Length: 358
Image: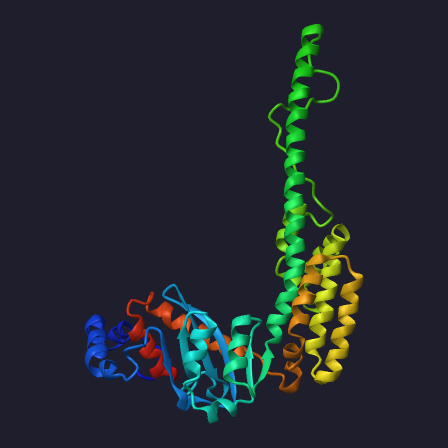
């Protein structure tokens, strides 16, 4: 339990012992939790400066309804010596105060810190690691641009829902009008024939509304609902069914086609591993020009976000570093928390994190 994210109950089932008793024994006797030197402030922060390295990652995650910032060492590879520090909350001053406790020589030796587009993380790293190169994760950059087609899709979906409601209302009015018209006609022209009624079969008063279908068999709402994940991928990854759906979608909604095209051209920049920061900057500015010619406000807003931290975004092309190590660490913490079915004692949970990944 000191080195693996397992629960006492899972061990109890394996070795046929009472898991609750084992957990209490481990916490109060076997683990050394009560003698932990950082126990007093464990709920708010902990520092393991001996795990410092030259390439770090920083990210936040939620534990017991509170946000914690985790600083991790990439050289730990998600195992021992990975966790460097954690701090409760997202106040820049509080995080900086704790991380400044790391010896200055270790802080100045940091070469690179990867992160997402968070302004809090950027401010913290700039103050604590002044010599470090800040690299913004390329996947988060692509995600920001990918939000533009998603916003346009949602707008189109809302319009499609409104249009369908209008069609339903008009259909009901037409049914009601037809019923009144048939009643007036029957009163003026009493039935005087035998056998089968001649003429076109009248529309039933309780007929159901059938929405308009497109060439691929989907209704506009279904089409916009099914294409959500598809729009986040490039065209070469689509199946034949998705390509057929995309053809219909782009014909009916040209704005979505334009936004998706700009997303693919932006993603292509980061897929090119032959680029340097200088050549990538040229390609990025060409993409800026494409966006400037577009009339889509959502894509322009994403472009402005990228522009604000252009240097940090382009630092990806120095060593092609991502923030995947921090995301992986977050997922491991969440999986461990899920095994425990929630966190009851935050201090003990943090102690176990420090034992397993510290």
